Image (cartoon, rainbow, N blue to C red; front, side):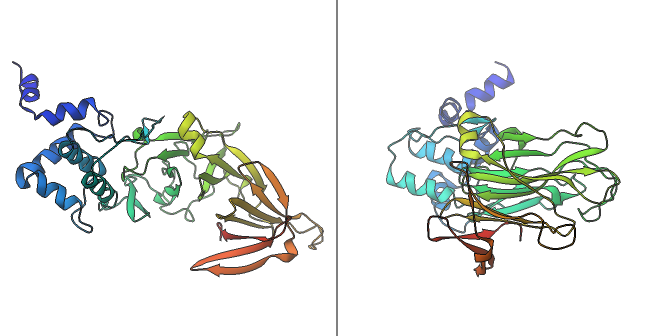
Length: 349
């Protein structure tokens, strides 16, 4: 018997059950199994399960907690990752014991400490991180949480020596494309291999000196909202600035993202652009104003409520806008066409 077969034969029965069950994908690896087995050897199955059901104790990965549940329930608990290599997953109804339900709930409160030198984000009481320690400008790594998961963009490799966005020269450019990913909430480490790629911009836009960027990223319910532009080498101002949306629920089902154009804007030249989201009404509001040639208000000025579920655009009365705060977030309230009002959190504040 060779070394590999002997090792397989010596593994406990739950290895085989886990490999054949919902943990067979990349979201649950053999290394994670070994970590769980070591903990059980040292402390016993009961102690391992008990520690995972206590809030604030030593962090453990969701997959490891799921493996402990598999042992405790005889393999009867079905847990599926929402995404595995970009594919959409399903969660069938399953009857589980009350103790298993409690342990599963506790697993989702587990937290890990990200390594030093990486970008980290906190959503729903958990920390998520992307290992961009090799990136020169880590500010380009951004992440938000939609109702369907974590949407994030990894920092591309950039030319030049700047370590901040505002330190970049007008000739700096990306060596690798800007990309947008959707990850399930069960994995705290954001990795391209375990995520669904929503978008990849080309390195150039027809001309070798024009480079598309993802400039900003927000969450609006199940929608990812993001800003793009063209950075032209040697030019101080951005070109073709636009706002887009992606329905992450639809992307998770179909495995494809369909970016939807919302509006264009210009961040320089005396223009004003505001973007806000009313979560209760599920409405994205944008306001644009551009002075006329004489510096008066004879130029463009519009306020629009965009309904992403229907695509309807509702013209709002700019004169009726009222600004306020909700906690530490600035808000804007507009009267609605059909009566009532929209109160939206400012996204690009």
